[in-house]
Length: 214
Ligand SMILES: C[S@@+](CC[C@H](N)C(=O)[O-])C[C@H]1O[C@@H](n2cnc3c(N)ncnc32)[C@H](O)[C@@H]1O
Image (cartoon, rainbow, N blue to C red; front, side, top):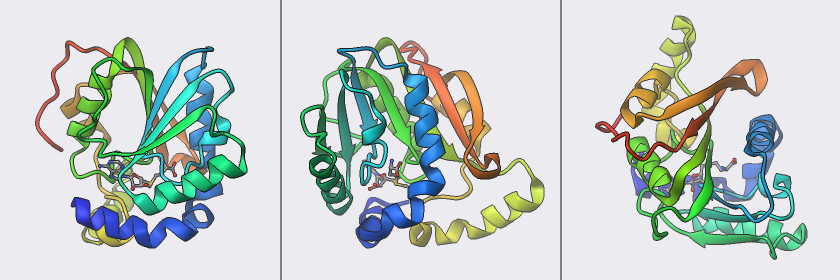
């Protein structure tokens, strides 16, 4: 996915995104926030926050920073903050998650919900997530990966040329993603309908270098 394709696709999606991808992907968002076991005073970064469907799920007492590259998706998230009275504990910033302006070790936990197969370079995204997360912090990812079932994987590979239209790459391989990012995965759980999405929880081991792009 190229950045200008992403911008165009999510500009198109923004107004109806919640209708298409709200309830169907909400169990995965909920599972991540439950696993965060948020403690008062923690700083959480959510990359690719989109329209902010996860934001009402975070408990009070933590400060959440949400970033996204799409101004139109962020506009929807801003409207949600106002509507749900969340503005005092959530900040939204337009920023490229592959080149974040935050200093090293700025956050306790870093979250990516349905984003790693959208960005141009998933390995670079994870490198940046690791950089801005403090040592000993944790990284949380939920995403669709290439199916382990050959017939479904065949369809997903065939759909790959439509990534720009779909808004994500349907053929990102989980094992390759973990190998290239060198994520220290401590939990891997299937979530959402038919377990078609995967939740990953990883320790932020700063020492492990990332490999080449997926
Ligand atoms: C499939 S949506 C997921 C939105 C939200 N996390 C959710 O749970 O619905 C992917 C989001 O990632 C954003 N995105 C894609 N590439 C990005 C990048 N390089 N930096 C920041 N956000 C990006 C898109 O604009 C879009 O809002």
